[in-house]
Image 1: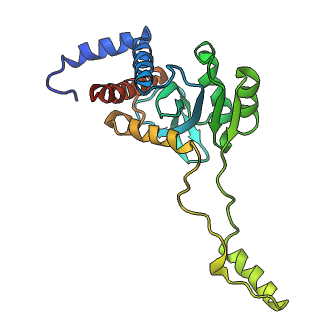
Image 2 (image 1 turned 30 degrees about the horizontal axis):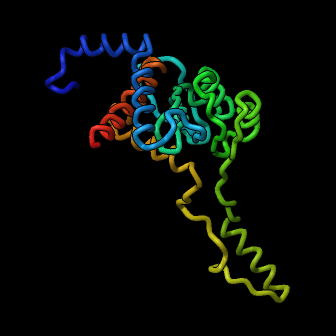
Image 3 (image 1 turned 90 degrees about the vertical axis):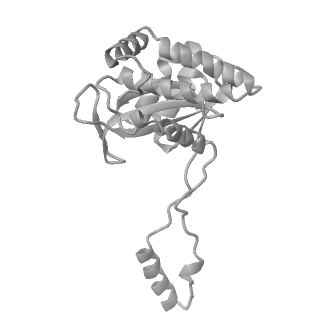
Length: 236
């Protein structure tokens, strides 16, 4: 459903499709991002960024590149983003959820090499460790820092078995004093990308992946972020 002051949906879809095909949405998004970064006192192109993915469920409309994210148990597609340290989207790709992050990073950054000449540092989660990190450092010449969560402690059942064994040997152990892994952990820089996914998901169209084409999903990411950046610029 469209707002009442919009033209007929066929007209709206025609221009959305035409601008998606000729790259207008992406160029518009890039121009406004550069303008907002200059307004914030930053260089138009970032020197550091964060890469991350969001697995989104697809609907029954059909379409290309769908798969199962075995880690998150979600069937659909992944939104793969490179964001700057302000949380603004630099590059966006949509692909099947079955593609691991280690391989998806190449799909994200390989087509954008010429636009990332200033990029020199990346933060990433543990999903990029291995061939994803190695490819980025070798192909793009950037330094990649993998940000890990704190180690997961053994299950309480195992700790109780250990406590009984130590008690038999004459040692005492207070289970309540053992460190516990927090439910939420503020990881350096990774929260920036998670916040960007939250901004995008505020748009009703982005609650799921409703699109038949991955390129349409990418266009809607550009539209959602353009809307956010224009609102920020209009406040000044």
